[in-house]
Image 1 (tube, one colour):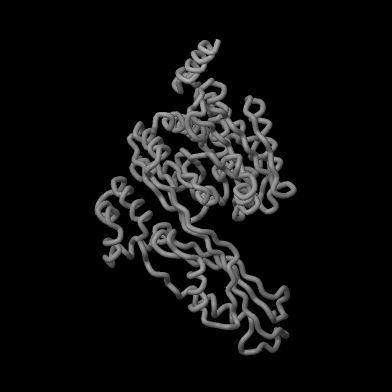
Image 2 (image 1 turned 180 degrees about the horizontal axis):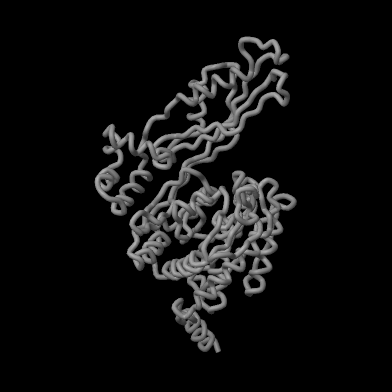
Amino acid sequence: MKKIALLLWLAWLLAPLAAPAADIDWRKAGDNAAQLLSAYIKIDTTNPPGNESAAAKFLARRFKQAGIESQVLESARGRGVVVARLPGRGRKRPVVLLNHLDVVPADPPGWELPPFSGTIREGYVWGRGALDCKGIGAVQATAMVTLRRAGIALDRDVIFVGTADEEAGGQLGAGWFAENRLALVREAEFLLNEGGSIRLRAGGTRAYEVAVSEKTPCWVKLTATGEAGHGSSPRPQTAVTRLISALERLHRYQPELRVVPEVAAHYAALADTVAEPKRSRYRDLRAALNEAGFREEFLADRHDAALVRNTIAPTVLRGSNKTNVIPGIASAEVDCRLLPDENPETFVQTLRQVVGDDAVTIEKLLSFPPSSSSTDTALYRAIQTVAAREQAPVVPSVLAGFTDSHYFRAHGIASYGFVPFEVSEDDEARVHGTNERVSLDNLRNATRRLVAILQALDQEL
């Protein structure tokens, strides 16, 4: 009896996949992703206030219908997180598919269609979150459901984690999850999240851009004080004028140019996708930035410039709530983004020196340690394998922004920003803007590529 049981166990362990990816009806899978996304967009999860629990429960129901176990957790009332797990063969450690449920606000004026309509029209799904990040969640969920329905058992469990609050820093979402429910993913080896895509370039070329690192946020608040009074008889120096002077000093301050290793690797990998003379310059960006002409051209692109220096952007100003009242306190919130090797505490000290006014205090509102992941991993190689089928290079990238990946990198999970959407400059402009949308072709192809990456991961050591 024991021998029979052993043989049955070995047969299960060594059995081939139940259905090759080639047998999957990808058009149907794409339609499923589109219908899921359309309904998902209709759930307004604008942050603030978020209300992500409604979206978490919606996704949990969809997973249940497909026979995939899931659970909904809450960090606070209405701030939901959904976790679903597709069991594999258990030969290797799990892979996490991370996404967020919340979206940024959408002002209906300027939109061709209501931003929470989820309308499918002209080959697109329209609405807030179509790309950031509900479309990503829809593709990840559809990939898992497709694997389940095809009877494909991977070597690893696949864990879907949809979090709250990413658009406000993630403390009530991924941050809370990593601190309180990490056991649900602690054994995971890899994680895929937003942050990278297949970038469409001039001439029809494409590159798989995989975010391996992120600039570190360092949000600070400047508070200036002075005597309050009537607007008809101002003093020479007030809280508002002190704040203006402080912000002007920050505006004039230019952090030094530095090419950190992750950025050097990004441009070196990107070199083969551009023409000369950029190609040779990108191969050695540090040396190229010593050339005045190239440096001026490079820094003229705000996206490139943000990757070679710390940036400082005043975003929120507060003063009096009446035109004729001089406030005793005026404040500004400033969004600073630091290169991956920068210490936030040291940078705040630098800001204080630049401002140089004891009547203006600077406090740190948000920051966290820098995070990066190696490109020498099985998951990165799996992405390269799938990209090679399209003769596309894989480019390691550094995000000027930040995602929830850092919460998991801090616990040793190799995390990459990559979802296989094809993204053009027009698509990118719609994210956090008006008329956000994703094409039906993109949803279908992204689902197919994600399944291919997960299967290729099985073949990597």
